[in-house]
Length: 455
Image (tube, rainbow, N blue to C red; front, side, top):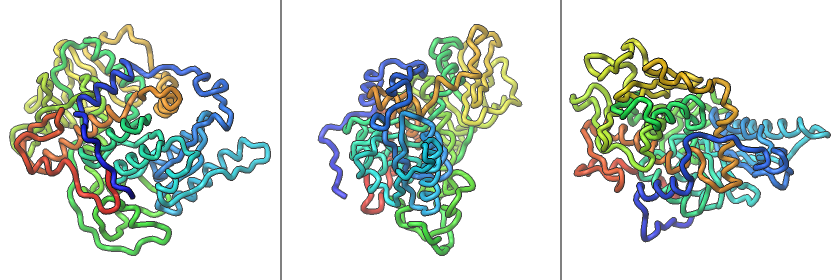
């Protein structure tokens, strides 16, 4: 691989995000897209379809693959995985699905790859879905952008803060469309909640609460034989080398998502794996996509009851499962027995609160706060995350969760991890992306990558 050189003049994160927001326009909610955007009333001719490659076809990747197979404006032409069973199974799924729509009942137009670089070298791949583990998101995104591909990247966008910045810079430098898999920005209940917050329906925001606390640690596992058909060295990629253990990867049909999340070499634990969804809604609701918190205090300091962030406007963000009247500020009308919704947010304002979660969960105080709002329980058809991405590939506009927004939200997760790992209260400069007067914390913004991988 050629050494990737950084430009002489690199933008600050705030400048980049502000420019991206300006280019995209003010987007308060996803929009309905006419079928004509995709060609012939949504039934695009083969020559007009977007050629898609799916990189990583485990539990999440297979879900993305199934979605892509349903879109007439897209054609899955390639899949990639270092697990032979998974990539061959994905190839069969593609060919079986497309064959069902053909008069002869056969189709042989999907190639399976072990190495993502071989997939990225194909001229007929216009866009890629990156659904690998966090460990691969940075290098895969930078390589894809450099290869001229548009990108859908699973959350969190990176394993480190340094990777997040390199990814955002690469996407901008090569003029790519990049949607981040923080799909709650495309779901009706979260769109509604953030719009009401933006409209000032609950007054000035004072605090936000989310759940899924905790990060991970370094682990040492006993070596086991590498399953035949698994390219273990390529599976590790940029991570430090370690012997294979089935707790990190179960060969074949994946029984569940991200079994490796407990290992710090490969990710950030709960904060990056789960809480990032909620952080993304907080960032959006607070209109902080171009910035972030300025202080992070972990409970290990004894100063706070739970991981606590502070923004420059004095808004507090806390990670807790339930509000304890003796430890947290409990808003009027809130039942302390209520648990914060998984992946959801409680926005607390001066004049009320909004509690939002997945699958249409929406509660508010005062109770009539959203009385005149339309029922969005059956509105998912207007908010499909993949469809938004495919439409933006055609129009070259920013998707609803651009890499700019995903960068901000993922960095919030990384800040919490670093606060836990250092056990210190930290001050953060969101413009310069540096911790203030803390060299130990700054060293944790990035991690060395195993050659030849880099961002």
